[in-house]
Length: 279
Image 1 (cartoon, rainbow, N blue to C red):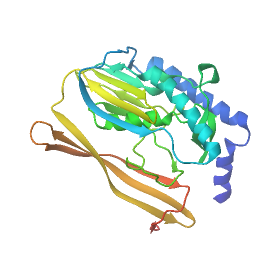
Image 2: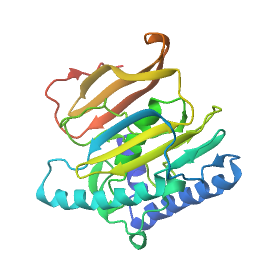
Image 3: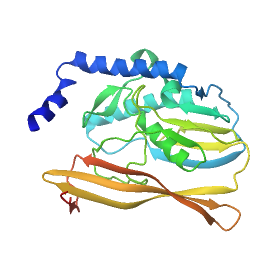
């Protein structure tokens, strides 16, 4: 069993040509699906903001890491500026779907993208366009506080660094990798929504706005968070929940729902953990 598992793991990594062939095969499939999936993708952008804000959030651009990593972080900011330029002002009208990958496109040097930190094969490394997941993370958190339907979302399969001033629950973001790991939102309402992103000196900021004021809002939180140990490996798990509340009725609870469960390997030793139960 161990030998077979090792062979499967190495097959796509034995030579770079196998990896790139697999990536481009998946990208081709996605490109075909964009024409055949029947979705109406967003195209229109509006500089003028819609009148009502649904949710706003922000995240720090720089983290305290090693000196060499700081160069990748500064490059990440340049990468995020390109994302902002492509996404800011995007309207999601009734029946439309927002696709991060289709909107931003393939990150390349020719388009101005630089080497930034990205997570691949369980490791943090430099890659063209690295760091743009910070924008998809932010947009996913915003979307969780809106009636937009999140119909495609992926989260990182591992947690590379211990929490350093983390504000949001673990694995509440959305990773992207052009173009087969996408982040997509569909507007199944009769309202028009707008995604706005901008960068300040220290922050990436964003908001979702709407053309008519909503009479409800959302609260997103986590439950059952814990670290688990299995042999010499550590894992992290939690649940993301959401409540819908009547805005003009003293926040009366309308409904509560489990959005998703997360489970991922961590690359560090947690301060506190439980032993994973054997099945």
